[in-house]
Image 1 (cartoon, rainbow, N blue to C red):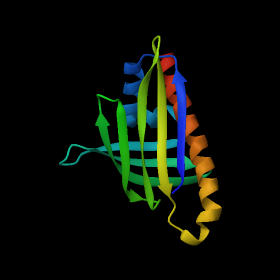
Image 2 (image 1 turned 60 degrees about the vertical axis):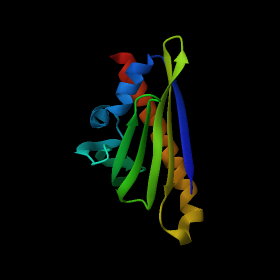
Image 3 (image 1 turned 90 degrees about the horizontal axis):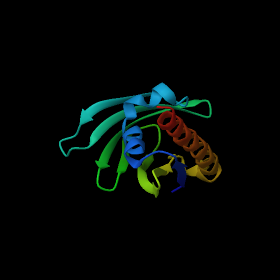
Image 4 (image 1 turned 120 degrees about the vertical axis):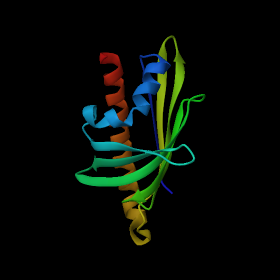
Length: 147
């Protein structure tokens, strides 16, 4: 299964970075590749359910995911429950970078779901996901440092 991980140091306190990461409903306001994120509510187990529409290399990907927030470790894990990819799961993590800075990490494992084309499509999809993830992290950085 392909894996993508992106880290970005941000010149902002951990609390500000964590708030920006977990406010999914704001993403479309300042991330050009995110068309919409709607937080639907919560599962009986307490996970948040969100519906996504994201532009990836000229194509729109849509999915619904469950998000679990761990305030103690500032980690938000997500798992696709339905959508365009066969599998899509990972996490966002905010760590203290020292001296009032943060390090935000986005990590994802995915499976396109077309076994015969996986060798050709997975590297292309991984590159596109990496670029999209970097754009999202930079957008979070701009959002925090401008506020």
